[in-house]
Image 1 (cartoon, one colour):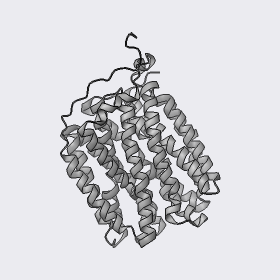
Image 2 (cartoon, helix red, strand yellow):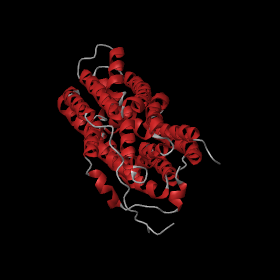
Image 3 (tube, one colour):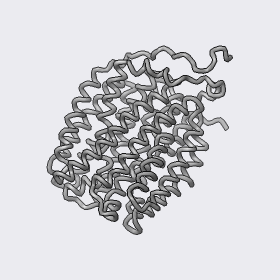
Image 4 (cartoon, helix red, strand yellow):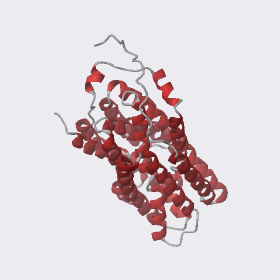
Length: 405
């Protein structure tokens, strides 16, 4: 069955919305896990740290496999792995089991059926004039995940416990995400895959020496460190004196703001340039993060600041993914996106852990947020200098036989 590019885009967006529960759920699960086991904030964050590293490693490995064999088998296998990880999480009794089930299995699975692979797949269906908006629609799916599923997971945690929420997530992935991925995760370049036009790992090295790429990698690192705000959003709200329910609402506010900002910045990047809009997302996030370090007078102000600090995150990632794709082209995009993502995930693993240690030592996130806000503002200034006129680099030599027709 031949699907239109719009159908592929919508189905892939639905899949990403469901698989993104792999990361968005942890903010809700962190307080009850910490309470049940009596762990410190830093210890309870270890599975998330492992998941961030696993996500990055999976993005590189599965990105290369998608370049060589197509996205479809990679996405389907990733959904099954994630479902198994949440099942194991619901049955875990100690830290190493949580780190294995959630950290390794769910984290690696995010690299197979999350944003990197889906952004790569969708980018191949759209030209440069509409690619920014198309990839932004994919990027809008993860923030929709907490908007849709956070209230359900919060209800399950309150009515039952966090284990039931994990088991329900596993069932959702098998019952809904897997069939939708079977229908929608279709490659636009099937002919090239069948011909086995594959590139070796060394073919990516020239791209990694490109000055624009180096700057984009550095900016992606700072973006990753700032992800601690998502992982600790409920805990952050509690540190500001609010109830856990306020934190759960803030997760949904973040989701709504992220959807709007991803679509808006993606559309603007098609019209006014990728670098300008990317720099603007970093600047807004930096200012919002600095505001989060202040005393928060009421819930409404807290929600507004959360929307500024965390909302543009997925607009940032969408524009960066498009810039990487347009520099390297479709034949190496998977592995390059994966490499950029592991940089992001190393930072995403370190950011929440450093924030946890800072909280355990001082009882507050404020000092770390001041530093993070200044880094984001500095990143915005550097990114703004990137030229949008960077041309696609020459195609590397195939690893397969050049005589192949």
